[in-house]
Image 1 (cartoon, rainbow, N blue to C red):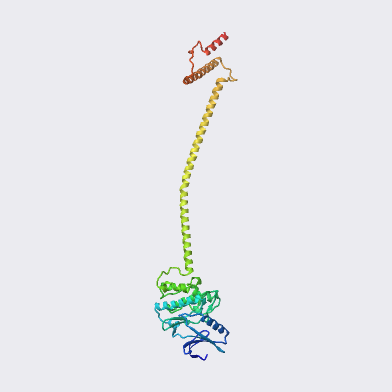
Image 2 (image 1 turned 135 degrees about the vertical axis):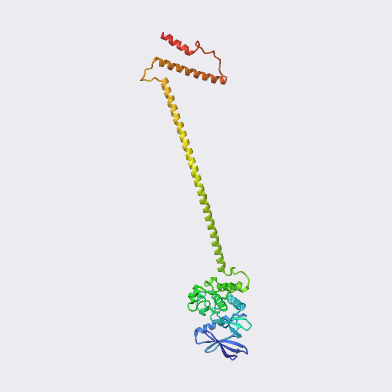
Length: 401
């Protein structure tokens, strides 16, 4: 402690005061905490433990720490320059703003890779040296955890992520929310959300961009997204077109971006399939409408043909019945004598002559068929002397005599 000299006060923090001093003939910044407050002792131990692990150009170099009966001292390099709160009031060029944000992202990538979450990034905790180098300070509220999930509410409300304000579980992405707010402040020189109704203003997310171009707006929205999963990591933010000056704003950066693109593609595929199915159904219905009249015509034709066939069959059946009736009637009239009528001799003679003619016709037809087959034997011509019918008639006459 004899080598440490406190010269003058240069700043105040929420839990400490910062003094300019010398340590071993070296100009230093001395952070002093009141040991009588138990929570300050915890903050002191946590900050020293984290600072001992860190060594980066964009961090203030940690030198040593001391403890007295009533005070706690953290000794660091002194950086000549100003904090970012003063610069936020000035009209900065876009290149200057990009340089500040880029350096913050570089140091955030470094500490996040060590599982350290700063949890209190704000303009008061960012120093800009005379050489333009940005340095992140005050790790009193920082947390190092391998679980990556925290629940403590801490930090400055205006730069606090909504999940932290609502005391919900949060990740290292709370630091990226603060980066987005700082970027907006450097451009617009005002806070993006209403102080009086901060939560309601964040939920409505009605932001009035007046100076920021589309690329800067896109960067802000990917840092200060309400959904923590939609926020870029510090490493991803370094690849954003607003930082690099090249690339497409539509290119996916975060996992959330890739998931959104994948889901949109799936929705598009489903929509195309649905439209194809609707088109198929429409074509199918049209074809059915064309087929039904044809089927009706074919059915009507079949019915007509069937009706015609039935009519023809019925006519044939009727004709056959009439023919059978006439044949049977002729047979009975010719061969069967009616028991109710007594036939006269004249009618009997007439019937016999008819039978004789029918017999002769039958014999003539048989002889003609045999002649055609070449198997006919020549017989003497038929006359009254050798005709069996005439012989029969002669016998009948002889009997009657």
